[in-house]
Amino acid sequence: MSGKIPKYFINDLLFRTNIVDLINTRIKLKKNGKNYQTNCPFHDDKTPSFTVSYEKQFYYCFGCNIHGNAIDFLINYENLTFVESIEELSLIHGLSIPFKKNTISEKNNYFKKQKLYFLTDQMSKLYQKNIISTNSALEYLNNRGISRDMMQLFYIGFSNFDWEGFSKKLNIKKELEKELLIYKIIYINKYNKIYDPFQGRIIFPIHDKHGRIVGFGGRNINNTFPKYINSTETSIFFKSKQIYGLYQVKQQNLHPKYLLVVEGYIDVIMLTQNKIDYVVSSLGTSITKEHVEILFQNTDTVIYCYDGDNAGKNAAWRTLKITLPYISDKKTVKFIILPDNEDPDTIIKKEGAKKFQLRIKNALAMSKFFFKNILKGVDLSSNEDKFYLSARALPLINCISSDTIRIYLRQILARTIGIVDDYQFEKFLYQNKEKNKNIKYKNKQTTMRILISLLIQNPNLSNLVTSIKKFKNSKIKGITIFLEILKTCSENPHFNTGQLLEFYRNSKIINILKTLSTLDHMIIEEKTQNMFLDLLNNIYRKDLEKRQEYLISKEKINGLTINEKKEIWSINKRLKNIS
Image 1 (cartoon, helix red, strand yellow):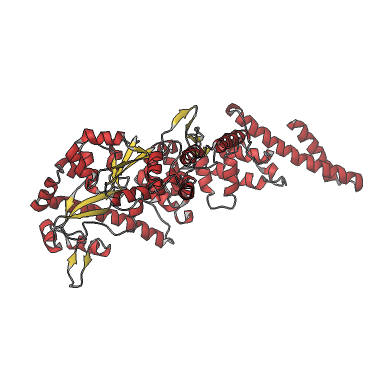
Image 2: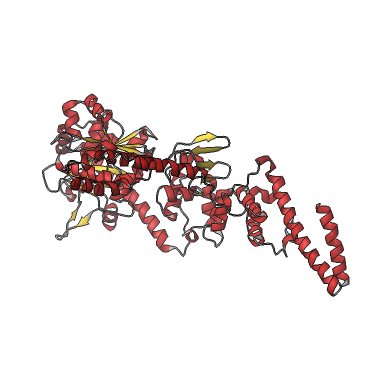
């Protein structure tokens, strides 16, 4: 993919991007000397092992060894493709991607997305303008208790019952109408009439994290079926990846302590109106693993709040099962199950915000909710039921990545069925003790490996190399890669580690470079330059010594030519100077 976007543009993006700021908007970083640290977001990390270097524009985890530059972080953390990560950085810096001429499909897809962003924004403005002068829509919102402030905060609008009236009322130009048809935001029915799929509905625009409107939710006001609908999926809108209200939450708090997940648009709006400003929704659809990943990327504690009917309770249990693999020592979930026939909208009107806050405070911990549900219908006096309980519970418990939580739940399960399972806990402690003793396998740190790693981690070291002629005929393993990296660094004197690795992203040597970029050579920073020069001299000395050995051997057998005698004299002189 990187071949479809000019390398100069990618390099410029990385030059403009401060990886510390980029990551810090997603994960809280703490200064630690020259670098920044936090718990790794890519594995269950009990101590901060995730390090971000401003100087190198590079991140590395000493626990799971994941590493890379700003582009790699977006790919790994937000599950983006390479091109999507470039789009993300381009958006941050207000740039357009200059696709190469021979990449028509990617270019067309990119500009199609930009057009969709524009058209959904235009439609949202039309819906918002329309609701102000539509009494029936305003009356509906007023009856639901939604204030004008909430209408503005959530960009609430209304679509007329017919497109023709809507178009005339708002003076929609034919050119815009044509584009809306082309991009399938509005349609033509079998009677050759234009219609809006949201006609006759209150409109809830759905924002992405940048505040761009990517789609809509619509609620009828005249009891037509279905009650709610969402936009069809497009290249900018995927229901399984979109969280309603998250943009508004993040506008108030970049790192919310909690996220309260409810089922409906109006639930989000009414709770927000009552000063509970960390409420989101999954667009009325079932929670997906993508939703869970996004939620935990934005908070450490997710509180699910479901309606009190059977459907709500079943949905809560399904949600827990989807969430279990993402729970860790730092990431947890809680549950609020409302009374029968109640939802967040109705109950906050009955009880008020203070009592609802109390429900949040007393939300069921994950472990209590888990066993409350898993024990339903189980007769603990029956051995068969105990076996059934174990067979049902253990696979779910084993989904959890955290050793601590997994063992804790197993202990509860063991006690529940009447087994005191101390052995398992002792085994766990022993395994962790041995794990801490274990020294991870490291590649042999040869002179050339250390030399290349120093250069990758400090590209400005290339300035110390005044000539590469003396290495031209070198046979030392790895010299070709070293000279290649040296040439790139010399031609790009402002490269940092992140930019250098990006330059070689699709090359045959990228995996070698990535490994060496994280090599810990235990060299004090102040001595890096001297070590680099010493290693260069060592390689040069080895080359000279090998040639010297060859000539001495040849002299004993066949004798040397005049030129070879001069060469051995020259080698001896150079070796003396190096020493």
